[in-house]
Structures are given as C-alpha cells and as structure tokens.
Image 1 (tube, rainbow, N blue to C red):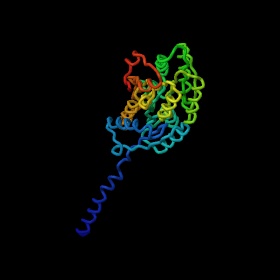
Image 2 (tube, rainbow, N blue to C red):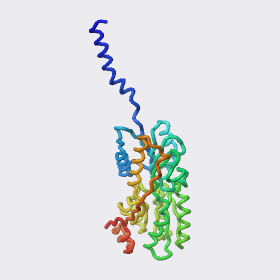
Image 3 (cartoon, rainbow, N blue to C red):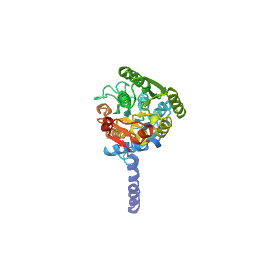
Image 4 (cartoon, rainbow, N blue to C red):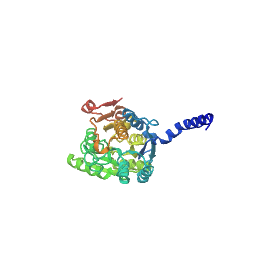
Length: 327
C-alpha cells in the first residue's frame, strides 16, 4: 500500500473512533415517574423531588432521564401506566400521589426498584417487610397522613361546642378510605364524638358532598387525605366558605389557599426525600437496604383570616401550638 493511501485509511479510522465510542456507551438510565394526579397542581412538589435528586448527585439530562406518567386523578388508569413503564425497561419507578401509584407499581414488578411517598402504613399495605429493612424492591417515605386522622379530629373538636356533628369526606376510589374510615370511627367512639361520612371521587361529587353537609347541618368537616382532593384546594376553600363550614385538612397547601386549619407532615419534604433515595438507587444502592423514611416533625397551620370570616375564635392554646399562622 502506498504511503498516501495508508494515511487515508488511518485518518478514516480515527474519524470513526468518536462515533464508535458513543455507540458503545451504555444508554442513560430512565426514571419512570408514576403519579395519580396532574402536572400543574403538583409542579411545586415535583420541583422538590428534583431538588432531592440533585442532593444525591443526580441531574436530569446529565446522568438520567425521566418518563412521566400522570393518571390525571383517575386511579383506575394507574395499573396500565405502571405496566407501560415496566415495558419501557426503566431503571426505577418513583410512585407519588398517595397509596394508589405504589400499589399499582408493586403489582406489576418485583424486580425494578420502586420508591414511594405513602399516606398509609407501608407494612400494613404489604409494600415492605419492615420499616427498617424493607427487604424487597420497594422503599420510600411514609407521610403518616392517614395515621394522623385521629389527631386532626381532636384538633377540630377544640373549635366546636360539645356534641357537635363532625363530617369526614373520603374518596372511595382511594384504598385508604376503608382503613381511615374504620380508624376515625373508633376514635370518634372513644371520644364520644358524633361523626358521619360523605364520599366524593369527582369535582361534581365534591359539590354534592358539601350540599349534603349543609343539609345535615354539620359543625365541621375533616377532609381525608387524597391526591385528587389535594389538587383542588380552591374548590374546597370556596365551598367551605360558601357553606360556612370549618374544615381541617392534612396538608398546609389548603390553608395557604384560604382553608382554616391543617395538621400533617411536610409533603415537600417527602417528595425531596424520595428524590434523594432515587438518586442513591441510581448509583447502585438497593431498596431492600434503605429504611423507609418517617417524618420527624408535624406542622400545624391556622388561617386567622378564614377563622374570622367563619366567626370562629381560635383558642390561645391552639395558636400557641401552631407552626404557621396566616393573618
């Protein structure tokens, strides 16, 4: 081979090296993100999820990609959405927006890591073997939301005359409805508190539920934790004000929107913690070895402007306990 031809061959081979190197690089891992709600109402929480990923050294577009699947409040869509993520061979599934997404994810895979935010006890739900050693492919953050229903009932009773009727609104499509109803019935019985239940799974049914509350002349409402409800704080605040019904919620987002009172763990912190775990799993850690994270602080938020509009006097002892008072 002539020297000139030999140089051409080498030059051509060298030019091909970067392309070959890129072709041999492993594909960027994909996080399958499964949520029971819609993007807009949860945008601020998804931002804290990304914050957690960054804290763990993971940045979208740099060392992972995300495939988002939103159920838009239709929990019956979650199993198919979860199955689709499995078919895409994602590296892990992040299941947020209450209990339904993680139950759907667990039902379709026993091998792909799943990281959740759960409102109910993950051991009781069958998600993990124990909180300290989950033991399978699932771990995450337990918000204690359902467990605090009794505490919220005790708090709202402090605003009412004795023997006043308290109503509880639950979403019958949420798996937590049955368990939370039983827990609240037991708590009300122990406290000697009259209680009744109403149910709603759509915006129209929420409107109808408040009409029922007005007919029953309930003294207060406890809104059970539910992602579909959380996505509609404005609707709840408007209906509670129109019907002059004091309401207590699990998340401060309702109080920030004009609701009366809330008590629960920080959702933002839960989403951030899940981001941290997702980043650690991307680096090779196993869900079985990552303990379920539990909140260490619970926040009481009170909106005094709303209390004044309802003609309520918030007891000083309750104000002294509040972490946030909106005036």
